[in-house]
Image (tube, rainbow, N blue to C red):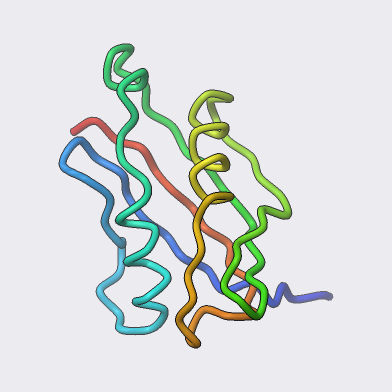
Amino acid sequence: MSFSSHIPVVMVVGLQGCRSLFAAAEHSIFREAITNSIRYPDFARSFHLEGVVNVDITTDFLGNLSVTDSTGTHPDLLDYVTENLKQLIIGHEEVREKQYRLMLKFIMY
């Protein structure tokens, strides 16, 4: 049996913004960066689109994010998330050289 070394991060993206599902202090810098960069996209609002996006992310020693794997219930939500994450740099020491498994649940209510 093999265990993943990815750190799980689960967040909900609603019309009022993105928030962590858990209030734990661990990985707060990473969760805050995601909160600031992922919003409910206009196209999803217009079509009342909801869904789930799962993304495996690796950070390098400078804090650059790389998406190593991704799946989603809707291709446009998946593209939106991956494009936003690829532009993100989180230079804080806490985030460098880590692997995350990010689950974003887009909910309109």
